Image (cartoon, rainbow, N blue to C red; front, side, top):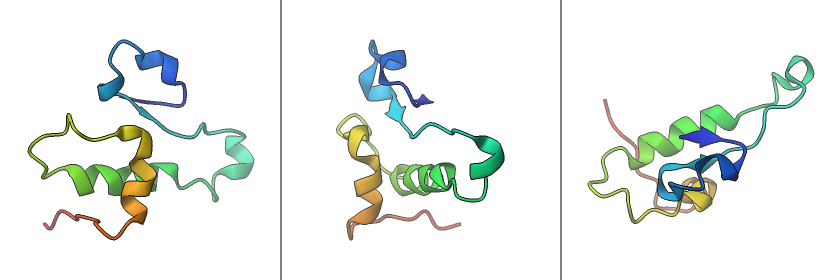
Length: 73
């Protein structure tokens, strides 16, 4: 589950991923890359067998470190 409010998945924190809110859509459309980064993260973890050990609070740093895993098609 993806949301900009952590409280929306307080009962299942391992199943929730906090993303930045999309504000002022009409003026920020060209500068908002949150869903692009989220897609990269999901592709990077897609082949992992166990997702329960991931700390989704640090999902952006997972992409920034050198251990990026890409899914090849």
